Length: 307
Image (cartoon, rainbow, N blue to C red; front, side):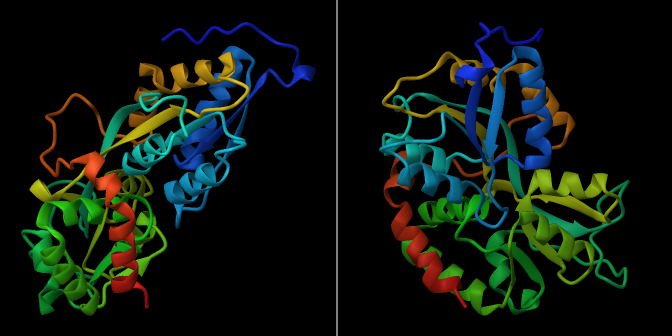
């Protein structure tokens, strides 16, 4: 892509700046936003959040600021909270958001960095991972599994999608048994990967981009597919509704973030998976119902996993 054109404004007018609330990792997003500024002259003021709360923290901030929003653009890293914000009227219109790219929920195991994936424990002894998520409640995995605390981010979205898939009663029983098995509950998905890399957990539930980032760092981990109980998660970008209207700078930034240039760079950085492979198997939620039942599900997760 050859760049994004935009009519230049006086820097003193404030019209040459756009505010984005960004859930994409700061280390990945900032170079892309800097490229946008070089191409267009439009400065970007980005607001990020910690890995522990990620998209949820920014979504709650957008909801709190709905009457007088600061943000003009929202860059999300999963779909549920974007759909929640759309349903709440935070965006210019319910369809003023777009999805692009994907990453997936996966197992992470300790393994050699190249060749076939051979899961091994801390001493290098091979082991067989569970065939399905339901097996995590077996005593074999007590104290050996790592996952992000499931009130936030992609872990919460994944567990809420499982609630819809299994039904409330079966899901509640599984969550309760999993919590009783004493998993490591981490601040975020990258912490899951690092605990597995250190050999302190045999396996973890995480996102494919976090595994790829760890492999690039030389950590001895690999990803394994979750199969039909995985979840594919796009990035999203949206125009925030404002009483003073949508400025062209915001529309220009959205067009840039939706561009093949940005998606290609996110793939190259490992933040998204290559799009030329087969569509992965996994859950296909009824998103409208998932949004409607989200708060009930989050309250259940808090009751079960809060220690």
